[in-house]
Image (cartoon, rainbow, N blue to C red; front, side, top):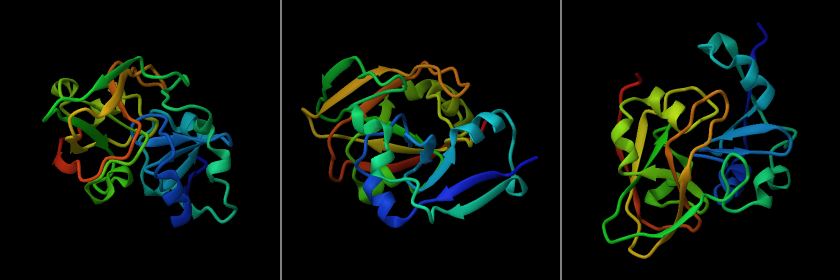
Length: 204
C-alpha cells in the first residue's frame, strides 16, 4: 500500500491561512487539490479518496515539509467566495447573536489554530448549542459535519460572541463520503477573547 503523504506547512503559510475562509469546520480547500487541516497539514484530495474508510497508523503515513510551497494564498479556492460551504454557496440564514448565546467547534486537535489565544479567527465555522446535544463522540462529529479527515474530532471549544455579532447559519451538505446534516455556523469576522477549550469527548 502506498503511504499517505501529509505536507507540514510553514509558519508563514499557517499565519496566512488563519484569516482565509474555511471550507468547513477545521479545514480549507485549495485550487491545487489539497485539503488543509487546522492550517498546519495538507493532504491531497486523491489520497483522501484512496484511503477513505481505512484505519491508518503511523506505518501508513509519511510526513514531509512543504518545501515547494505548494500551499499558499494564491492556490486557495475559497478566495473566490465568502462565506461559503461545501458547494461554494453562502449559509442561508443571517443571525445576530444574543447576550450569552453559545456556539461550539469540534476539532481533531486540542490546539486548534482558529481558536488561538482564546480568540475566534475570521471566516471560521462552528455549530450551535442545540446541535451538540446529538453529538456524543468524535467519530459522530466527523459524519455530521462532513469532515474530510476521519480522525475523531474529540476536542470541543466553546464560543461566546458579543451580543449583536453577525453570523450565518445553514445545514452541512454531504461530502467526503460523510452524511452531513449538522448545523453549520459561520463567523465572518474575528472575535477577541470569545473562545475557550470546553471539553474532550469519547472517540466513539
